[in-house]
Length: 137
Image 1 (cartoon, helix red, strand yellow):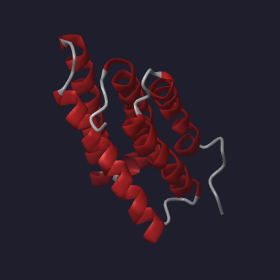
Image 2: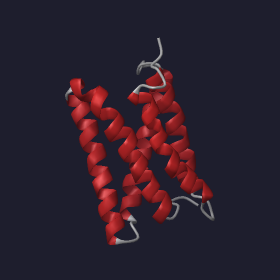
Image 3: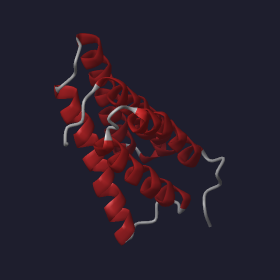
Image 4: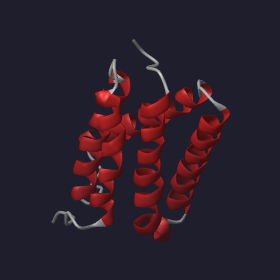
């Protein structure tokens, strides 16, 4: 049985769309973010719709999700202004906290995973898409 589209684990993936859109509309587009986050969004949505079933494709999803986190952390090192650095660090810390908390305490998963690992990274990617240059050209 699949999760409903109205399930927070599913619909919170919409938080990734503004960052994708901003990155795509830039001149030049921020293709490294578009490609990485686009893959994560599709794979993560598939994984959550299937109730987080572990399989080979789930391992690919986890790898892409980790790569997106590393990408955000690397971009944080190149923050173009102090306020952008502060916002990036806040998103990084909130994401790490949610990841650790929901893995240590499984009872927090349904409530905090969508916020800490979808909404916050979506905001983070919008910041990166708006103010950063591509890491890989």
